[in-house]
Image 1 (cartoon, rainbow, N blue to C red):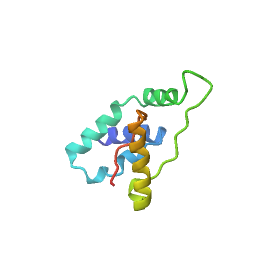
Image 2 (cartoon, one colour; image 1 turned 180 degrees about the vertical axis):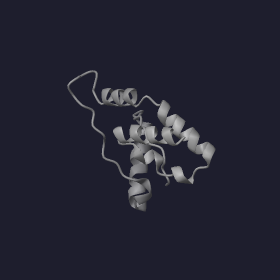
Image 3 (cartoon, one colour; image 1 turned 90 degrees about the vertical axis):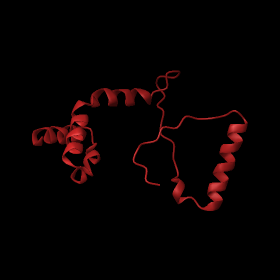
Length: 108
């Protein structure tokens, strides 16, 4: 297991994903083994090539798709929350929508 943990750490370091082991020490032995095995079996090369390809607009291949700025909901004031709720409701009523992908680990 120690050898596999070291391999997992090297993989994660290569892809700047070390945070995936942040709570490793809080896991029991079975959970640790499961996590390390998952990390060792992920094809990070494929994931990152797909990610990079997803940033290119297929209609205009030279145009990169950039992340939008964002606001964290729990940091919004009541007025801001109401404002964004109205914008969202109006967009839905107008048959406008967007697809949003969010990372896991949200605590709020």
